[in-house]
Length: 570
Ligand SMILES: Cc1cc2nc3c(=O)[nH]c(=O)nc-3n(C[C@H](O)[C@H](O)[C@H](O)COP(=O)(O)OP(=O)(O)OC[C@H]3O[C@@H](n4cnc5c(N)ncnc54)[C@H](O)[C@@H]3O)c2cc1C
Image 1: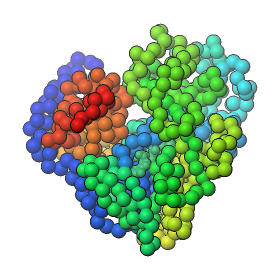
Image 2 (image 1 turned 180 degrees about the vertical axis):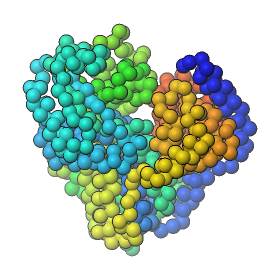
Image 3 (image 1 turned 120 degrees about the vertical axis):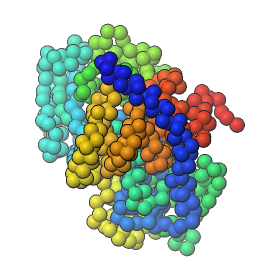
Image 4 (image 1 turned 135 degrees about the vertical axis):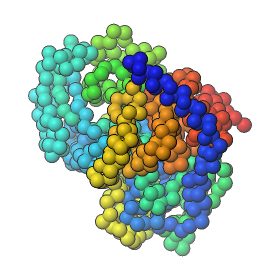
């Protein structure tokens, strides 16, 4: 960091902490207000639809239905996107690898879903180039892969840059870090990447649903479901207060991801599909290269393996192992497999070891199979990643099986069609329910940002101007932030990471942050970018807690560090 910038940054940080202390008392007023209000409404209203599960599939279901005028509730037993939807590779991709299993329909559908996301979320879902190394002795001739890349491009209707074949020498020139001794050449092609992270992407649908009148609450678990006189009565438990209460709805959407089968068993629901699970892990290390491309390889078992840029870090993975439970953890073997794979494929000055791991991600892909095929699903790696929205019209239940984050807009659309077919009226059936605000709103925001020269507050370490980051994270609501800074420039002072005072204040009001982990791991990626010891030492963390939790700052801080130390509070 140049010295002048460093001094500016440092003084902003220091002054930021002073302001936080001044505003401590005011903050404690609004904390948890949104959640408390919503929980109250969940217990007192009758809903058209109750969505159970706040991962990406539940979030898009709620966002689509609420925008079209349904009276919707959403409950999530953890934090929103607190399970599978926080463990993905952060890619919106057409699934080039499924060409090998001849799933042309799925690839075309995913490519088009990817394009739709890129078109409607231009600042969040961005094209990224993949630089793929083709190993010597690979099961397909490079020409076949090159043709495959063109077929892939055509299936994506030419929406991205064209693919290129590269010789081993060209590949080496493009990325000096690649170990091309093992390579017959390479391919460059495009897919897309979620600029922030998967969990924040899912959360913005929950936020959009709430903006359209949905009552959503995290840390509320569906315990028991009974159908009575054409209505569902769901017994729910608020994990924050410990209270149980009933939610009444005409129709249930079971969007519990890997738990769909459990919930259906509980409610006596029979389905044609069920899930099998595939575990995948990622390791996060310091940035390996300044190349903004995804480096793609074939692991020794032939599966695709990535090194994905993630700000000042690189995310490496993934694995694909059949497991019998959704509750999985990274094992020593997993870590070693990922480290060995990347060390063999890159020429690093010092090979990566476990000490280089900053954070880990681990989850299961819920894969949809027909009930009768579950025990005998043949080659597990060839199971389809296609989602299924299965409707039981008599019981008024929709179950969402399998799928990919990339396909989320299709899931939202399909859910609306099924809900209507089940007799729920959608007063605004043609209302578009997804996408960033119009260009005119963006221009108004940018004009407002230019008026106060907002980008001068961009921290020197940031990779993009502040106005770009604010628009991507908050859309039209970023205008409130600019207004807050105009009224009181101290609001632009950094509290932690890149996050300003006014952002944290807004997060406390609009983002239903119940635990510190919700903020560090899902609303932001701080817990993935910083080692736990560094987070603990960060001078801004306690001020962040104060802004987010008011009087409960210390207990939320303790909960985060102690719970993860294995020490439980009584
Ligand atoms: C390693 C890995 C990499 C992946 N990479 C990609 C990728 O790059 N691109 C892509 O498009 N897809 C990817 N995926 C797939 C994608 O992440 C999943 O398809 C998607 O996140 C599933 O979302 P979901 O909403 O169905 O499930 P979840 O996100 O698991 O959501 C279900 C939610 O239901 C909640 N719940 C369960 N029971 C209850 C209850 N009783 N009451 C209330 N709430 C309940 C859970 O807490 C959970 O949060 C990847 C998956 C993995 C594991």
